[in-house]
Length: 141
Image: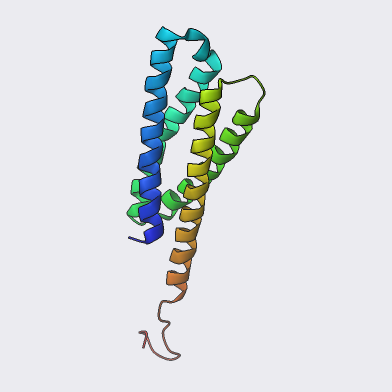
């Protein structure tokens, strides 16, 4: 397993922990301080919870050597990075605590995108280094 994929696996695990923490915090806030548990906050949380299910599945596929799993990690990381930055910048749409959570997720997704892209390049380089059959023979030398 490449060091980049090991780091990606850890980031995805951290992302799942952050999302579970957000769900718990939102549930508590809905009871204690409902004005901080807005419908927008719930909408955001449901979406990131869906990705908290999808990302570990795609990470497992990438760790098994699946090119599409690795590509999915990169794409999902980039999409979550942009979406969280845009949502955090929307004035008045989310409570401050959730904006902080969005920025934390954005930073994690930036790191995930970098690590998964690095792993893709590494796999591409390893494929191009395979021995090539010498002219006139059937096997590599």
